[in-house]
Length: 113
Length: 109
Image 1 (cartoon, chains in turn yellow, orange):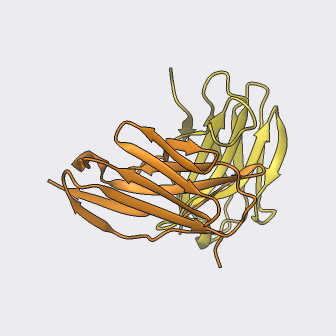
Image 2 (tube, one colour; image 1 turned 180 degrees about the vertical axis):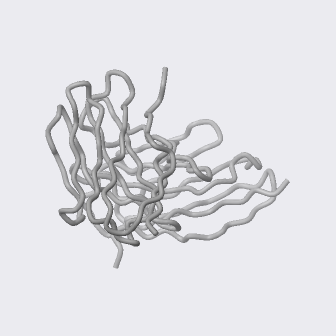
Image 3 (cartoon, each protein chain N blue to C red; image 1 turned 90 degrees about the vertical axis):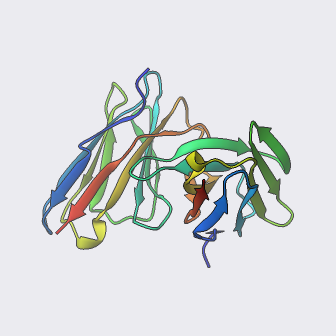
């Protein structure tokens, strides 16, 4: 079975641009969460979606938004990119809302120049 | 003060050694406690999770939780070079996981 799939793997953007990151959860998983991991730090929670509804939001500005589609895949959008947005963006899926059964993808490495 | 404190290391040990990794936390509302392993350029991989205070063993790995002291540990027996990675502790709170900064472990052959 395929794990959590994220695309693209790497991305370079210029300050002020917008970016969309994509995530396909494990088949049958209905919950998707997004995390930001800056180099040398642990992942920081951005969003959780369950059954296509936002169930939680971390301490991130409104420039960050996300959505979940009927097939449970998800997109994370970041507008007006700043240099500080450079990070590894991780998507995690689980069968239900429980956080302790999460499987993470390999992430999208975003570099803002 | 961070909610979860974890020594970033690096921790360097010889092959076969017993490794002890630790985290402390401040929020008594944390319910579940997890350990993840993260190889370079990869996403975190769940190793173990525990709910109550006490020990949980899985192969060479033992997770220990002491809720009264707000302290969790991961022990790795007979460490191997393939165990070289960053180890992240994480705690469940509401709709999110709160992670420590991660400890870099290097096992030398």
